[in-house]
Length: 314
Image (tube, rainbow, N blue to C red; front, side, top):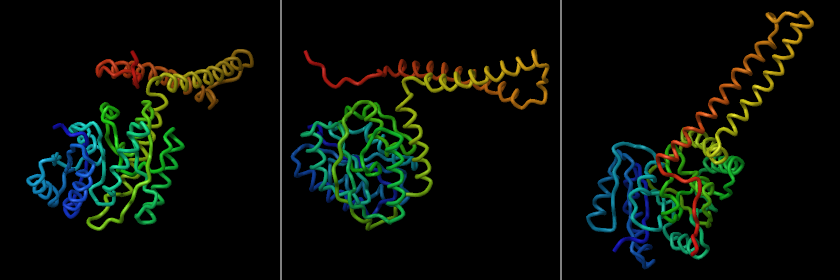
């Protein structure tokens, strides 16, 4: 029987957490009453994580393992889980035991009964160091200001998805944090649920300032993509038009002074500014045209549509 629920668990050097995560998760899923599978994604671990996964698989035929050749990051691991999952409901969670498997039935129930496409966990009472919580709060505030997505906790991996809503999502970098923003942009319904959060018992956190920096850069990409992905000419062409107008006004003014007031141009910095604005403006317009052409090629080759259908009534 094909699984209804697929639980996707990325893991990187979590050898002490794999067994307890599996034991707890299996007991919860068995009580839901739907066929399920557990997908462990070994993200290039250098400890015994993969060996622990294989020993679990020998005892539990609902377990599948995807092993990366090297560490590609959490976004890539989640993308692999989305690509290989067989269920119609996908659950993502961390492998460090900080997410509580007992919240999974409530996530699924809220998604089905309230007709959400995604339900995100909200770690209402976080069990993390103060500095990590501070950085997370700042990142969430910045995300809300740059996107239209208003969930409280973009860093919580514990979420439930309908499979159809993530089939054409492409994850890289630190984009896993902004999946709700990507899906909201496509018109999907996003909900959230307060979930339990536990202190890490084994292993060490993979959170670092490098991930924070990469996440901020990815956020800029998401904000731009939300607003201008379907109309890049509007921003590039708009800026170019402004630069050309200002540069033209400056140039006309200087030409007037040269022809009628006999003033020289060689020692006028304003002349260089006007010429620079004209050149940059033309380049921005050309860039907008090229971006528009590339967007049409992107949608055409991949047969993507600029819309998402919710229902068709006959």
